[in-house]
Length: 276
Image (cartoon, rainbow, N blue to C red; front, side, top):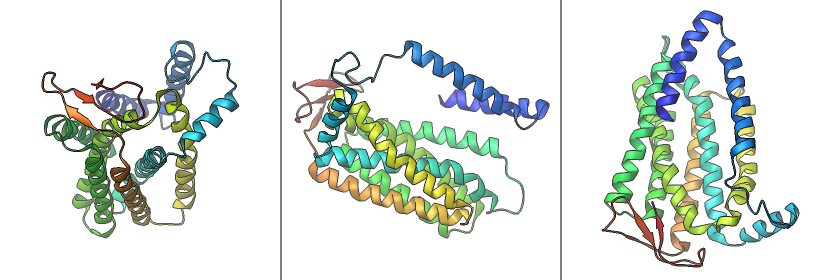
């Protein structure tokens, strides 16, 4: 995915230089339509109880009952807030860097650097979680606290290079967060409700992003970074509570490299489910 992003950004730069500003957008629309048709025709995953005769309203009601579990609510809020922070970050990093220098910035080069830092973040996840065996919940809380701190540095620092490094590191933390958050969700959320629950939490996610983006024209980009840092801090506090309420446990499987064995928790009917 990261390599494809870099390749496509280069291709779109060439298309822009030949056909003008809107040509890459038309191409993206075509790819989006093709992808939508392919998904509708072929994708059969994450359709909760799709073959069931239970009504959609009943499915929704059953999923909402899961929200009474505080660990389920915590997981949903963490993902909702962090994804909102990511979307705000994607819209704000360009104006932040433009406001930090008097000259022009090479957006394509900076984007490539950020994609590479996300790959690096995923490799850090492998080292910290899979090889060092650090605690899931403590690790995700620590990553969110670091993300909050980096946004604070972006707000207070008055250096283009410092802000560029911090923004790249924030993107790297996302590479660390994504696989770790997926593991935690698999431990806490009941599978048949997982997709529907995550869609429910996309409602506040979109509201966060819309509110910030609508008010973006009235704020300087550094204030937006401060708001994103505050949201990251809220998700850190929720992750701390999740650490207190955590369900089940995991142990390192020494016989299989890069593999963990889940050994408890009421989200599964059987113990010993292997998580690759």
